Amino acid sequence: MMPAVRRPGARNWYAAVVLATSVLLTAGCGDTAPAEHAAPGTLVTATPIPADPGSDLPEPGSIRHERITYLSESAAGQPILVSGTVSVPAGDPPEGGWPVISWAHGTTGVGDACAPSADSAGGPAHDYLAATDPVLARWVENGYAVVATDYEGLGTPGGHPYMNGVSAAHTVTDIVRAAREFDPRIGEKWVVAGHSQGGHAALFTAADAARRAPELDLLGAVAYAPGSRTSDTAAYMATGGPGVRAAMPFLPVLLLGAEAAAPALVADAMISDAARPLLGAARTGCMDQIRAVAATVPAADLFAPGADTAALAGYFAGQEPDSLTLTVPAMIAQGTADALVAEPITKRIAESLCAGGSPVDYRTYEGADHRAVLRVAGDDVDAFIGALFAGQRPGTGGGT
Image (cartoon, rainbow, N blue to C red):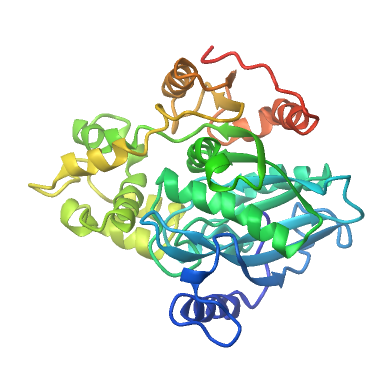
């Protein structure tokens, strides 16, 4: 994400978020409406983020960069407070307002410290976020307002329903509404883009946003290496194959994410005693910290005896993007050397979407791994987004 909280005072801001939540999600106070009477996308707080000399953002004075909180809707359909960032170019917007890119970030973890808007140079999720910062900075420099949600439960109270497409689409869409309240010069035309977990979110947004926010004009979607096949997690982990150890850090995040959306799926009841340190790491750290613990956990027998893995698989089956019907053109960018999101799987998703009538431009990048695709696909993505805002409908070739 953008270099959002690379400054002192993040804990004070988080305390303010908790206070805002207690006001909005209970009885209301003064002229502040309770959440059940406020519309999703309502802006709650906005806090300027001072420029960081070490960031990838343009020079001070050429951008307005703020952390916001806003109202959205949980996976369970309840009102929630969500945090994120809004970055607006300096100067006068074009006719119709600043074009908007709503960014959906990749996997950072499920703990509050993993929220991109809480990032710092030494933060627990900084290694990944430093790889996405240049992408977002380039878009702001090119004249786009860039909004970036933290998702449900990251940086705000409540659990994070990791890889829940409905929840992600709500937060990705509603931050555009909040940004337009924050700065009326931001236009109604927008594109969603995301990487990995965020690529999954971008596809769900492309299927849902027209219904959710008809007052906005979603033009298209970009999904870099979209996450999928979470429904295969239990079966894959049981194989004990050579790829299991690389996938282990995602197991506690998936379990805690499923529990956040479906409380009957109790993470502690799912995991074996030997693998239990993974849950502790996920609750207190982010992906780098989970990986460190995963290196010490045996790769065999990760699930507890009698764990209801069928229920887990059934929940995640409802989060697969294959059967979505996209209402706007989508570009899917996939590296052929990606060890986390395999190219053949992403190709099958593109083919399935195309077979269902969704307009998809599927592109592969030879030798690019999971993060490198952000860089090597940059020119193609920028051209695709530019064509959308120019009123064109980029060519879509399906899963080819």
